[in-house]
Length: 131
Image 1 (tube, helix red, strand yellow):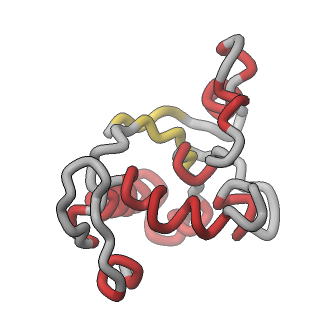
Image 2 (spheres, helix red, strand yellow; image 1 turned 180 degrees about the vertical axis):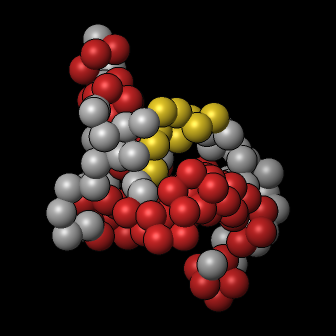
């Protein structure tokens, strides 16, 4: 939220100034995820997590969808499905943060070898949320 309120971020597709309320996952990736992880050439999850974050839910989303709305929807989902206490142990697999945006070659090839397939097939993953 602070990135979009303290800096002038211009959407590369529309040319409009990006505000937090309307920032898409494209914008989040361009202005936050990629610059934050560039020095380490890793995913956001690899950078910030202390241990493996096995997904409870796989999130299928449009990159053009507002990130702020995505967060609100997932907060609602976590509380509805996991309860207030259980929500803190609920992990959502979102490609923007789970995939290394600097090495996307792992997305090519056989479906079974992609991180998407692997995440969905984990025994910890209860299902897919489509946004």
